[in-house]
Length: 87
Image (cartoon, rainbow, N blue to C red):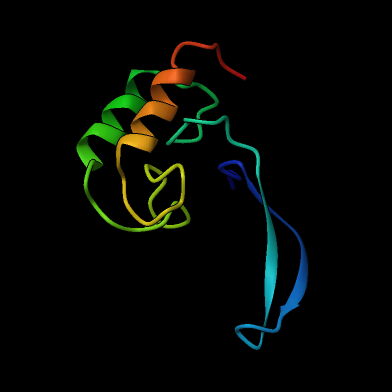
């Protein structure tokens, strides 16, 4: 099974939602939408094709800022990290 850069590292009780939840650790590179360890043209195209759509980064990896919409902030994050090499 592939981890896709997200690991459960613990649990805790969330008093706001009144339930136990997992603590997640994301190890993806900033701007990497598909978890391949590279910020490249594939990530740029993914953000461009998803531009304007809703959904948080937990369900839609193109929403890098996790603000609920794929927008210019997400596009700029990919552009600023484009071509910095791969893990």
